[in-house]
Image (tube, rainbow, N blue to C red; front, top):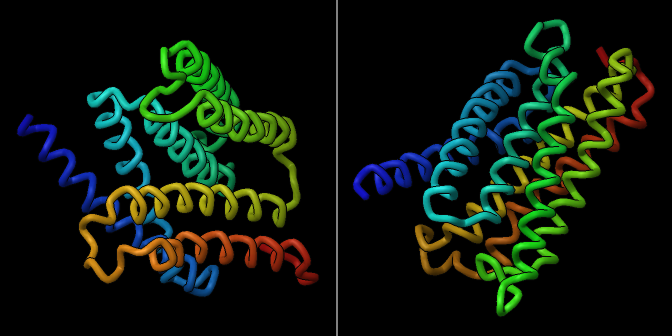
Length: 222
């Protein structure tokens, strides 16, 4: 119990670090030293956050957040590998990332079937459809993983967009869980849906803005 409480506290503060680093990376100029440093801190903290979240979810038997943690981990690691194809680890993750996403799809479908068989049709307080939505999202990621694995020579612009949206997606999941799942640590005045939604929506809008900007930018991306 003490170890679990300690891990929960560490998990929370890692989440705070990920939030700060993530927003710093988003608002800083791309390619600037601040963006690179903040991105490295975000990557490291997100890996630790998802692994500790996975452990806590397994310990507490919350299957839905097991899959959320796995999806966020997969998104952030494959985002990193996309721009690190010159490394052996980057190529390994790119080649076999589709296997991991396939495992998550299978697990989420199994969770949905398990929920459907429950007397009240709920697992972790959620219906089968919630698990199947996760399975559908991860299935799309799996298809994109497979396509990218067979086309490493993609244009630099496409690689950067893949890197961007996967980091953004992982950050979206993290902000959603942080602000809607742990808002008891926030001041009372901030615990309103509109206020809590602002950082989550900001992540989505910033990610879309930069993805569209890079996609239609005429100058070469290096």
